[in-house]
Length: 361
Image (tube, rainbow, N blue to C red; front, side, top):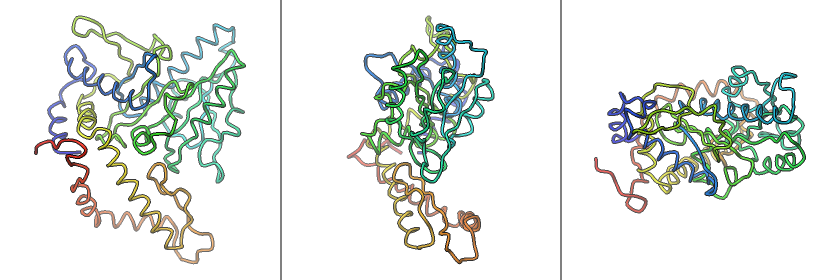
């Protein structure tokens, strides 16, 4: 991050983000970030969105999952379903991040994984609804699988869910795990519908310390409308003579990451984030082309969505080394090439008056 951001963050190390009555300006900055993110993710104007910062997107996933479970339980009791007959379940592709496994263990939910294979490097829409029943609390779509860099087809999933919900008393909804894509896709593929523009996407999480460009650890979770965040999960705290809702699992933590996130939003703006991510995308495309030219690898994912390159060694390769050997060599060379990488970053070509004003220093 920029030196100015580091100074601002250092000045807020001692501020406790959870103490909204003691540090009302920090609470205001957090709310501003939520408003900015809601706009970025196209929260409907006629609905009352809600959101909060978290300790990384893992806590955000926990909150999204808890909200789905509480809402499912309330609806199940309303329609006379025996909630003790078997465990509620959550449906997700096998490319999930481990936080979802933790969620299911901690909150006693069955994790139903839709297998991935060479023909389906994201959620298999041909079979995902086979895993859904009356005990399904929701389906998680992943906007950026860390193994492959691919996006789940959230729009396609939304159509399947809509058709399902038209004929059942036990509707399921979609939580989008946008830990990686939440602060990348809106700038690189603005027309791709994956967010609150889709009717059945009720909540989204993202990691501020990935493509949000903030130091670890800050995350965000938003619900499209307050009806999807059960009241039992919202706690009231005193705030300037009134009350302010809080819904995080973690309690005391420094406000510095919130300050860092707000700094980036104001510093870069939409065009700044787009310029930074465009450079990253171009590097990924360059590396993909270079790997293809060696004729040693099969490209599994070319970085066209997330700038993640995934490749395998050609099966007819006669070299006496494996991808593990290559990875080991790259790690050995990392220190040698690090200064070049830092030099490229320090040039910061996106910091020009055509995008936004330069901050002094």
